[in-house]
Amino acid sequence: MPDGTDALPLLTAPAAPAPLARVVLVGPGRLGRSMARALELRGVQVRLVGRDQPVPPSPLTWLTVPDRAVAEVAARVPAGGVVLHASGALDVAPLRPHRPAGSLHPLMTFPGPELAMPDLEGLPAAVAGDEEAILVAASLARTLGMAPFPVPGDRRLYHAAAVVAGNFSTVLLAVAAELLAAAGVPAGQAPALLLPLARASLENAARVGPATALTGPVARGDEEVLDAHRRALAQASPASLPTYDALLERARALVAARR
Image (tube, rainbow, N blue to C red; front, side, top):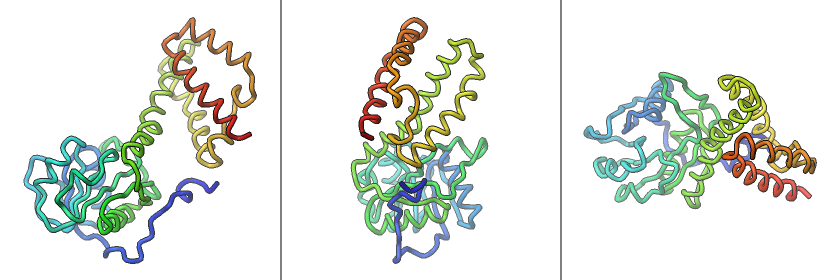
């Protein structure tokens, strides 16, 4: 299996629009501020406006507002240019009647440029919408150094995948840290101690596939160890046991899939 973004169905655009010169960003939240800074560093003229402010006309308007505000803000965007939103969960409907309209969703978490800027080079970015809007979204992504890929299917499933990979991996690290603390390790150190293992496991899964990358007692079929885990959890962290059991079943399914 190819490594990283090499496996993505990246968009090629032989008829791509000319390089972007001016973009209006609506929504000065963490993503909006981050994208404004990144575009300015790449020589793009950016106008960043609040979602309650008048939206100036522009060849390209990118709405980096919360999902619940997309339709309301889109209704105030002057007609005539391409309109994109940055939502992972929404399709193009909240942007109508704008045409061409679409979406550009960087597949990354953004804490805000004042705290940290993720490395955008090669960062996957999902694009969807009208044909011309997809080309413009892909051009915008490439301007930012990102690797655009199409999401033609159910946006809810796409966004659920992003939540599982991003938000829920944080939750799993928190559960693992609680268990490590219950074993006597200082709670404040537990997440950092587990991070190298978690990072290596995810990188291996992305490189060779989750089923092949899976190691540990499930992969070895060591039921005695797994039973010991469950007994310890039932005593020290009963709230974690259902999570452990659910993940155990999915791990067993991965092992079965490689046979």
